[in-house]
Length: 416
Image (cartoon, rainbow, N blue to C red; front, top):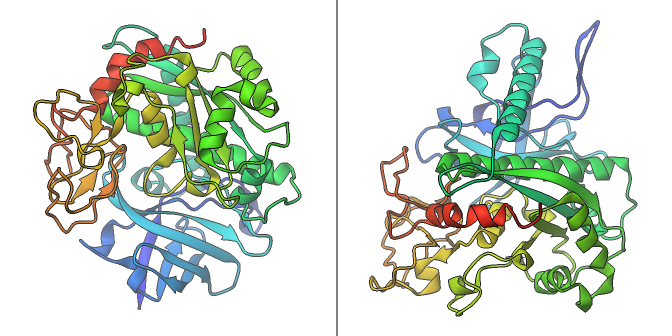
């Protein structure tokens, strides 16, 4: 069975030739799956048809590993490998498949996408010309928005400056290469594109939730010390306590030079890394201190492998540094007498969870009774409702958004 899927995607390097469009590396990312029907489980099928653009060939992707969450396969001509999963996009208002396709010949990713509107792109017969105009307009709007943001009160907009460093093996993993691979300008470009896309994705979450926060990427680079990660907690320690490991001490100087409010280090979880982490306010963990944002807390760790999965992992870890905790069920804090509001939120019916919440689990104090997918949506919890279902995103009693609004001014002044 073949299921037609129309993709609304960014084509990174396309040039016109006498024979039409000559395709260089292509980015496959946000795929419009709205026509597949409610509750469609795409991973149950043997094939998917993906067309990057109306003037480009249709790829038939063959399912090579059926799982309960992913469609993993390669094209019938052996040129492309795709790893896809489904979630709901608020910004485009349709169900999408999210994923990446890679060139099997050299194992390198074909890039990372920006989110584009298929409706915008499909209205013109002059496809590449319109795409160029659309991308330019989107980029200029983003830059205008960034330049207009200002640091101020909880009701004003702030910019939080972010610096991202990554290990050598993280760069290898990003390009689907083995540990201790030969690094190149191509592997660097793949990593840099991924970091830029993570910042854009995180800003979508802030815009959706009206936090008044925008992230600005002020610097990114490969680690220059040869640092070899072991666990995320150790990397966090090495970042936040430079005396603990002189290898990463140079990052403190970089943070000062680039005036970065937040510093993130991306690792390769193949090297026995135990997961991911972000420095949280102590009060959110039940400790008496610190209760206010401090520059020494502005560190996170995430992995190359989880930059673009359905859990918004980098944004989740940054959420900790902004003052947010996991959901009440995970934290076992459902006592109505407790006034803390900095928790993420899980829908009782299992329809969704916000960025900070863990997957829905029966038997915890938030009384999850549903049988839904409980997938993460690009929102912080707060006193608002999700337009898809009308369900509350947490109400006043679970408002990571309010916590971010409260802390953002101090955080945006970590480094000035």
